[in-house]
Image (cartoon, one colour):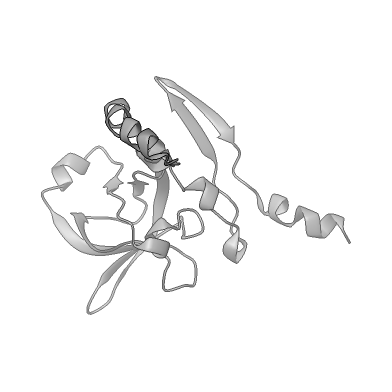
Length: 168
């Protein structure tokens, strides 16, 4: 970034142009991972679906701009399983056709109960998350070296309706 800035800033100053940049995705995009569990597998005549517990309300980027996020199975045998791949849709539980993380993705076989890591969810993940479809926010953890800290508790159903209940 420094080399780029040193090359581009002097000519812009000469022109009297002010440039504002938002490097958030570049800086922190790869710093976040959304973990999700496969609830069940649905096989149709044409497609195979893995329905996961995370939804478009947790990470809307794939639904909103068809952004690509690598999805990695979190299991000890994942490296060996990489040889056996399949085409699969990874979809959430929200009743919307846009609730997906991957469509026709070639990846290692996915099974019910698997934990999947949706990579590069650090930028515009939590800040664009919502309670759409009455879905509570997931927990957030910060990993620094070998230290893991819970920085945001998983939202409960009670948290979600507290304002309405207290106003009665």
